[in-house]
Length: 417
Image (tube, rainbow, N blue to C red; front, side, top):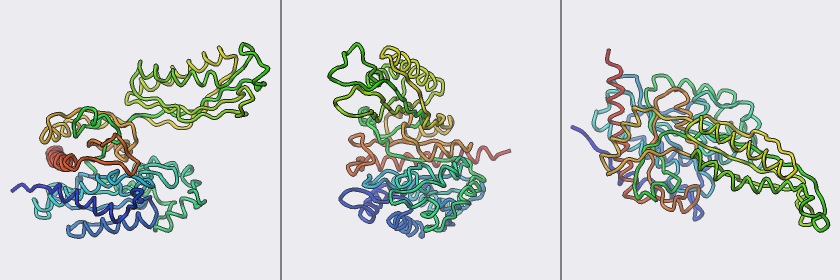
């Protein structure tokens, strides 16, 4: 007989976790800290009722495995860590939904599911302490830049390898986490949207098409300092002028190509009110799901910066900060996700993800992957006011369970000769 998850239990457990690891300022489950370890100990207690094999891999990712008739595995993932003063659902909803699905599977199949089912709590998805997001999942995929990670330090000067060592993790061996890819047949992840699109649509759930690719650069304009009182406007070489024009131009660029562009910082030199700006540095973040469109956005921004620089009689140069390829999700699993949402809701919109997620690293490892979004109230995340309606949380658990059930069937079908 089919069994069913208990979504109300998921909500109650999330509130229990909030009380255990939060303050009046929000969640405090920053990775590789005492509170994060307490959250993981609590998670282990919740999973102790199931006959799941538990272990931490070389990167500190925490795995729970219900072995099935087939070694081919469905993986459900999330992350218990949070940003400082973060929200109560970001990451932990993913994990606790997975706990409830594993309970249902165990109850239905009596400890012998047709395929192996695994739950993973990824280590340090947020990158809040050391500035390196997706640490555990990047080690799993093999994409972690070891030289970059080795020199990272937190605000107190503690090196990342030392913090890992305090948690029993040997930094030099973290990429051995790739062994966990063996027999991985599909990966599912639930996440709050963290934005306002579903709120504006007045819908609870969405299929995630993939994660945006990112082009992040610093644009440096250089002109000439001059006295702000004695220099006529037509004689100035003002480095701020082209930078200011770029702020409006990025909106025109997204109007042509879609995606999002953000100028997030602006620094001027000499930075005093009595001098024309000699140097101006701005940071530009561009994101799109389509790699061709992303490249066009970058080209348009470069052309615009050169035109504005020429018009202002200053120079411009670009320095790359970060480049991440778009990561589209698996078409068949997106179909299953659509079906699952329609089981509990009237519509199933398809949305891209602007933020990065562990699912992107799993997909980059060649494992069929899909994500589901649930609506965020206020469109806000990484903030103590982060919230989602309880009825929407419950719908997300039911929809994810439908998705897990259909994905397990698909894994079985693919194994047939």
